Image 1 (tube, rainbow, N blue to C red):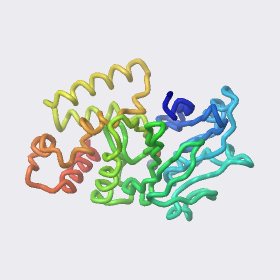
Image 2: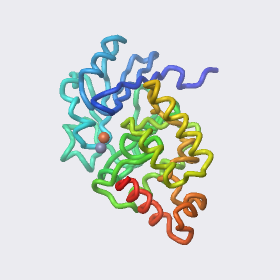
Image 3: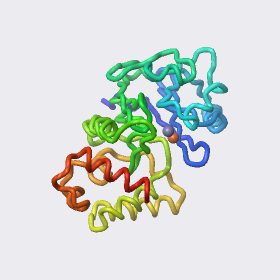
Image 4: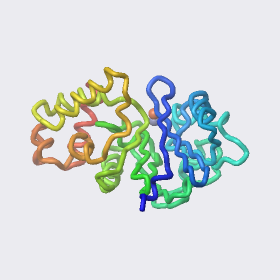
Length: 259
Ligand code: ZN
Ligand code: FE
C-alpha cells in the first residue's frame, strides 16, 4: 500500500527577495492550500500553471512579508487560517486556531503548534501524513527567527516542541537564510564535522541557485545550534557547560544578532 502522503504534493514558491511560500495539493480531492502569502504574483502564477485553485491559506504570523500577498489570493471559497490569539493583527480569519488544535488540511490531518519567540503567537503546522512541518520564522534551516517579541526562554520552549517531531520530518521554513546561518554555526563550532559537511553542502547548493529549504529535521537536530542548547558539544564550544539551556540558547541567539 502506498503511504497516505502519496497524494499530497508540496511545491515551493520563491517570493520577494528571500521568502518561501508553499503550495500543498491533494490530487485525490483536488484541494490546494497555501502556507503564507509573501506576495500574490508568484503564487498565482504557480497555481495557474498547474490549474489549481486555493481552498485554504495558512498564515504563520503577522509580519508583512508573510501576509501582504493575501488579499489578491483570497477567493470566495478560500478558508484563511491563523492564530486565534493574533486575530487582532492578522487579516480576517475564517478558522482561528490555538496550540494543539487539529484541523483538516487538503484531506489530511494537520496539527497546530504555538511557536512564540520570533513573534508572540507565531504558529507552526505539522502534517504527519506528509512528514512536513511548516515553521516559517521559528525553526529555520540551521537557524531560527530573530526574537522580535518573545524571550529566549519562549523560543527555546517552542523549538523543543518541534524537536520532538519524528526525525524524517521535513522542515518547511520561511526564508533562504541558510548560507549565512551556516557561516555563523561554523564560527561557534569550527571543529564540528557535522557542521563542516553541512556548511559545504549548503554553499555548493547556493552556488547552483538551489533552495536549501525544506531541510530534514534529523539534520537540524544534529547541526542547528538553536536546537542544541542542551548539547554538551555546543555548550562546551561556548564554554557554558554549567549554564542552563535557556542561557546557552540566549547566548547563541545574541551572538548571531551581532554576527
Ligand atoms: Zn517574520
Ligand atoms: Fe519573515
